[in-house]
Length: 183
Image (cartoon, rainbow, N blue to C red):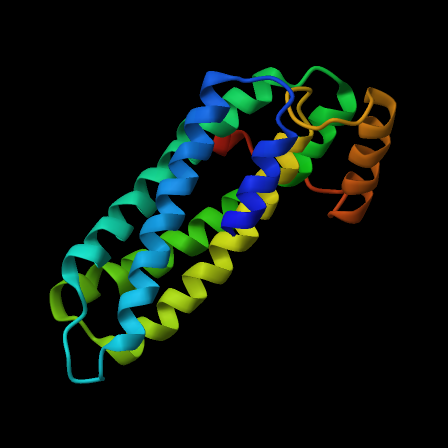
């Protein structure tokens, strides 16, 4: 996931403070995730997890999901000029919302209680699931970022064609979730 982030950062053609901040936040979340997964396998099933590392990861996770949901997605929408970009966003928003809800459900159900009781066997599986869900979320966010004119080194006509292919590949009947924008 860090490699994908580095590749995305390399594709940035223009620096935008909001996107730079968002990607820095993603990097911090990933570092906290890798620190946590690096600690968990070293523990045996009867040991408590590193509550400090778990708490740091959980805080970054909730902050990242909240800032995406309530701030960054809306700001990205304002950066999109073309109809093709808006169409892609209308397809991606419901998926982004579903992915965010899945991650928050994992947090509420497993991660937050693990801070209190440190159930290592359950936590290993949940952390793995969180990693897979984060990867899927980041892929969706990257598609959204790549649809802006601030990211990508290809010419505009190729980018528009790629956006249309992405729209066709992802549920074309989905519509923009106004609830997500109004939140």
